[in-house]
Image 1 (cartoon, each protein chain N blue to C red):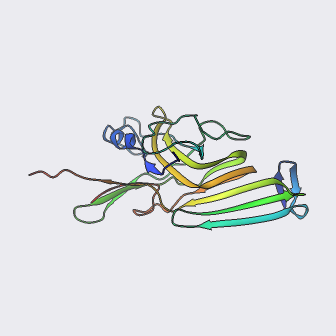
Image 2 (cartoon, chains in turn red, orange; image 1 turned 90 degrees about the horizontal axis):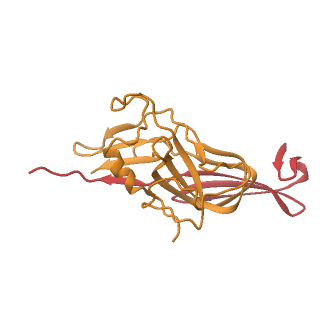
Length: 63
Length: 159
């Protein structure tokens, strides 16, 4: 598989691949990193928001 | 002060003046065309919060493949509302596709997305925060939550 890197497109067999994830109340995030001889040449991240701002509107009461 | 996730207070007041149009079928507007909403990214040292009133390039991320102002948000689904009880209800809206910054290099850590209305003087809607990220010759994707009363990206409720 070809990976877009800071050196141009490279076959992933030439690169060291690291990945990780975070899963908490706010987000589920994954990332992929590719290294060439120890140098980071590609990093992508994917964030899914779980906890979004919520506004509670208070209505006035007549009477 | 760090970035803080929140609905922008100015947005709440602007709703009452019909400033923002998320819908393509809104009789209050002469043209049934929804406004264009955009999503901009901000570095971890920015101070985006409920007091943010409009998009600003100050402390916005910069780097290869990223244009100031961010990207347009896909809006193919009109806002919805429903009653949660006889005296309460929820109005909600979510972009209809993921927000994707493609083929970018963003070397300075960022943790915030500002949703704003580029059709209405870049007025702010809400601030969303997440874990600090950098991107190197890659994509940054924000997948939207489900468009429901409890998870939608923009939710307004009465109790």
